[in-house]
Amino acid sequence: MNEYDSERIGELLAASHGLQLVDDPARADVLVLNTCSIREKAEDKVYTQLGFWRPFKESRPEVIIAVGGCVASQEGESLRRRAPFVDIVFGPQTLHRLADMLDACRAQRQPQVDLRFPELEKFDRLPQRPGREGPTAFVTVQEGCDKFCTFCVVPHTRGREFSRPMPDILREVRQLVDQGVREVTLLGQNVNAYRGATGLIGEGDLAELLERLARIPGLLRLRYTTSHPNNLDDRLIAAHRDIPILAAHLHLPVQSGSDRILRRMHRKHSVASYLDKIARLRAARSDIRISSDFIVGFPGETDADFAATLELIEAVRFDQSFSFKYSPRPNTPALKLKDSVPEGVKDERLAILQGRIHGLARAYSEALVGTVQDVLVTGPSRRDPCEWTGKTSCNRSVNFAGPANLSGQMLPIRITAALANSLRGEWEPSAAVRRAG
Ligand code: 5AD
Ligand code: SF4
Image (cartoon, rainbow, N blue to C red):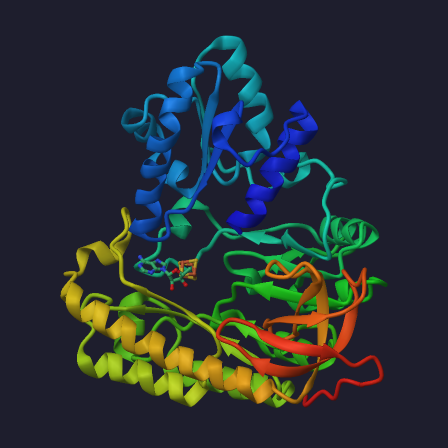
């Protein structure tokens, strides 16, 4: 989500002020820091980064420093008290106002702060995306969250659930496909809670949006992230069976494998209901890979609770996942629970969990060796510019040799080796991909 917002900030300032990206911050006229407050570590990085930028402003006072995103939303005016040299503070929902704020800041020589939640306005005001290149793109379709998990700042920093109307999304994706985009990832904090105006009568869900997008000629692959288990309903499960361009991978965070901890987290689902959804998803599409987010060391987590999480990991056999130590966040209900798990125990649990997930991910990669996968070529390989890099449907990077220019093509690639973070393969033009699902 932040990556998408950052890309759009760049596009917006290019359109409004003709600004171009530079590699060296010392050469920039405008420095924009897009921030994340999901964990304390991410938030601390904001002030460290601002400390690095401060000398640029001191030597060239006309430099403008802007801070946007969730830390801005959470800290508000107090961000300027801690870092008074910041000129502009804008929230995740007001990034479209950045161009006007820049003008106002320069004209009035006054700092500008705008942290409102005007929802749709942001999408209406963002420029079209003519300068974008590359075969993959993110498109935000939903923002905000009404779930209020007890550990999470998102409902407080991003606001309530909100969905963009389908006609706007269809228009944006058609335009991206015309520009050469072949894979679109639909984004939202709770993307499968999507309920947007259909443009005809009433509202439609994510399954309907995916069906309509899948009909766009030239679009070869669709993904969506991040989902909540409770919004994975029968219609969405059926979409995984019926829409061939929907990727064979779903990120479905479970956070913990203990019902007691899930209740304390206010997740509103149980381990059994999660397992039931996974079973139905796999019945609909047998080759689907599931990844998750996990929090270890949530207040009150015992050895038995953690053992239950490891059991769930074995039962689901998760693919590459994200895991974090619990980090107390401002304004969240979990702050009232005693942060009872010692730091050392959190570290230990995290290492065990990550080791297990890593082992499973590795086994999945090795199982791909010898198979032929549909690989969407995303561009030249970073390591070796004579090679190409692409992504499998299950979201693995593959490097292979091939002639120029293959970018944007979906090719049958035979996987020849599984490395730590990527796969190697060979282009087999005559091979057909056999789908298990
Ligand atoms: N501490 C640790 N991890 C957190 N996450 C969200 N809030 C916290 C927190 N306070 C993790 C969750 C979520 C992911 C985006 O970040 O696992 O799914
Ligand atoms: Fe945060 Fe996700 Fe829970 Fe919403 S559903 S409160 S975004 S963890």
